[in-house]
Amino acid sequence: MKKYLLLFGIIAALFSCRGGEDASDAYGNFEADETIISSEIAGKLLRFEGEEGRQVKQGDVLAIIDSSTVSLQVQQLQAQVKAVETKKVNLRSQIEVSRQQLKNVKVTQERIHKLFAGKAATQQQLDDVDGQALVLEQQIQSQQTQFVSIDSELAVLQAQIASAKNQLDKSVITSPVNGTILEKYTELGELAAPSKALVKLADLSELDLRVYVSGAQLPSVKLGQKVDVLIDQDKKTNQHLSGVVNWISSEAEFTPKIIQTKEERVKMVYAVKVKVKNDGRLKIGMPGEVNFE
Image (cartoon, rainbow, N blue to C red):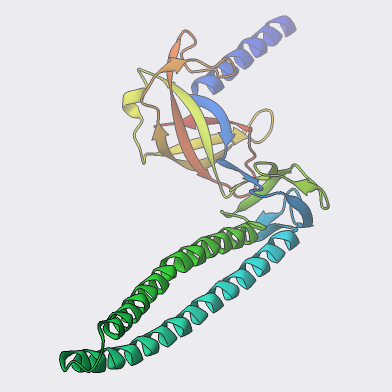
């Protein structure tokens, strides 16, 4: 009798396990959109707030890189701008002097022309005054063209200042998103370099459960659909959460080796993402199950 009871218990357990597997329509693992924050400039890390597990908000400072060299470069460029602007002021003064000289010559020129018309001035005097006026006019034109060269020089310096200030801005590294720091790749005092990763963070307030469904299941899955999500509570029971389908792959792929689907013989499946609000129980990589109906 005991043998029959033991056999019955084993069969019941097997059917119970099989029923548990059939209770879910798809299986997968939780994942999050991870963001790797890297340095864009080279320099020593003067401040580093990259502790793993730290929750950050968009705009929070993660690191500050030594930018003293760039600051000195900005000061030097600004001094050069002032020097060039002084050249511009001096050039205006020179042009004003030349215009006054031309004005005086024009008066003399008009008088000589009247005298020459009355045969009271010589041709030499007329030619001299006309030549002086012509020289001054050409001199003024030449001086005015120098503004183009000075303005070009100023434009180059201003562009260099803007570039240097951009480097200064990049010396303060802030978080582009709200999230939690998952990993750090450097330490305070180390040298940062362009494209060198500093931290990896992700928003853990919501996670995506990536599952795989067969072509036969696909018609019953829709974007925005609310679904039942199951995670392990213990060896025998599950916890139920609410999720929303937010992405469905448009192309089929071979079943990943780590995934067990409802139909064991299915070879081609479609990836589906289900967004689930995280109250702290969900972790990246944790397995989960989905019921679509």
